[in-house]
Length: 289
Image (cartoon, rainbow, N blue to C red):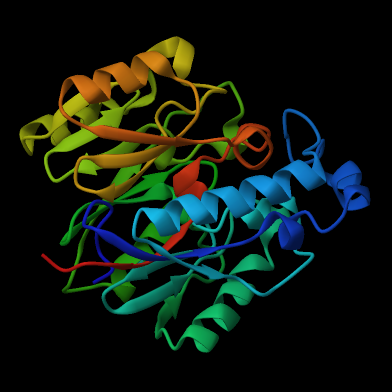
């Protein structure tokens, strides 16, 4: 079963830093143009990739390593180039032009892993996986902003017609690092009825929709939102999450409602590129209910 962000996580696709960052020379060429906060340190990034994979395996998650190399620094953020559904994978068309080649690389991975491709987003549509959040098995919220446009949402609706309700969520034009602002930057499912959110950037209509659907919302404090990525957590099982180290107040708020929080060191692979654990992993399999 694919259509969940909270059911027990069993298998993910990741890109190792040695294959995304390739070599220090490439890092020096790219990091400023990609709006990283600083150049990742290659050797340390590789160690962080290894450690994160071991931690996921210890939590019961099988890690599949993507084989493609030299696609750019951002290719380490594997959630964005595709959306995986019960019907198969949907290949995205990236809103960030420097990542245009990544969906084709995902197609190669799915062929290798024998995962069906259900469709692809075509011009003029754009869609990135970081804008797609599963609220439940039948409801997919999709942020519409600088990375994903209305045409991309419509195409996704057509691909999934009759099986999934697709909610289009208009994203604010944030004045900060807008090119890395996804819907998953402001909402992360933690359990079937529990979401971690950052209210200042949560669209009012969507905020109201979540409350009407009965979700309990745990708020990330302003000082832990950006660049600390307090709102970016990966749910391993309902009520058990993985987060980048730090964000002590967000952690306290989660633990106060019974959430178990595991952390990893993401100085090079997360903080500098503003991509947390959901960004680093493309979910391939979660347990059925």
